[in-house]
Image 1 (cartoon, rainbow, N blue to C red):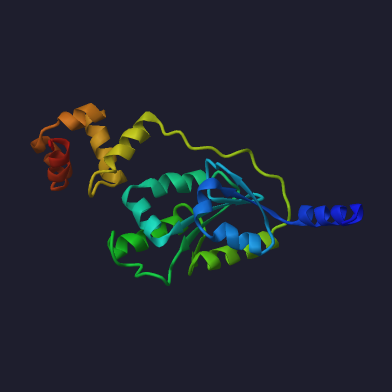
Image 2: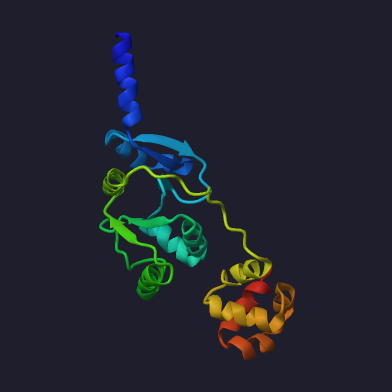
Length: 220
């Protein structure tokens, strides 16, 4: 190989579009497919998102991951985090591989979350069939975007003390943001909520109180 051949090869590599990939995505075949499609991949420990293409943050979730993140409320934090980027997309993968409305959550909770992401968070959603299909969508997106300056580095969003308390409360069954805020407003702090009697809890939140009280006072 001549010097000119080496130079030419290096120039071709430099001309490729670079996609930044979170280290945890190495377990999926999406990066492998992207490499086959001719992209340079740069693996990093990303604090936000799974893929970065210029100023676009992409969060990728399988159907089961998406359902789990609704149950443990993690989805809300992740959506707020990718909103730090000027452009953001949520990919939900495996739409043809399993029954979307079966299993972990009620089908209306699934639909409600989709509508909340679109309307409240205003984050576009792409539904893909599998990892190969996901890679092709990312490929088309990357090829459509011209190079632009990256925004200030995004970071994990630090929750306030009140948000932390609300986050903990929303981990209880059937406790959403409205009920959690009621409890915080009434009792002031987590200690008072934990020490509250079943009667006091029921006065405020009705039948939901029984399960919370049961979990708080559970002993092995």
